[in-house]
Image 1 (cartoon, rainbow, N blue to C red):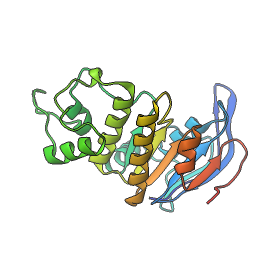
Image 2 (cartoon, one colour):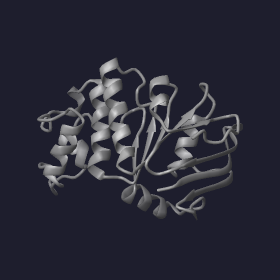
Image 3 (cartoon, helix red, strand yellow):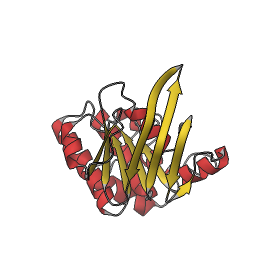
Image 4 (cartoon, rainbow, N blue to C red):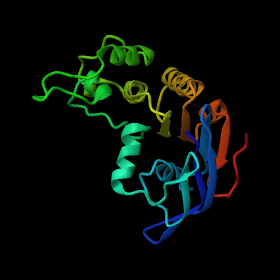
Length: 218
């Protein structure tokens, strides 16, 4: 999916966080949203993912203006096309690793449902093979980050929105996460990453400097 912001501005609490930002995120590559702390990287990511409305400008998906999407239309986009890996990982600690991948359970909540084989393949790809029955709360921070990516792989989303995916990770987990995100893009998906990590930025094919009205560097 081609995700675009066209001259968007956002004010939060009376402060202008984004001022005329434009960015074009193409399928098949990773786009890095970079900038100093407080520059609005996460805000821009949330706008592109339809998590946060814009005050001015427009958000386009595959050439269609989705700026004023209804709540129901946004939910359909999130359900059918998007996956999010945010800074808190979005992991439910009290549930199993398997449930955190499929997000489906039997009506009584006692048995994980969904495509079991696909779930196991997603865990294998992220280095969590054989851990589906463990409680997610037992995982380390790096493992939770990889579990969030396993969920995105399982979902086979068209576009992946990622916020600071390598923050606080050790070198081994950082390399693994970058490798997984790169593979996601190579498979034709759109990957949009908010980051200040130079190694993560170096792995991206496009970059947008938030706060300077700069355009993509391809």
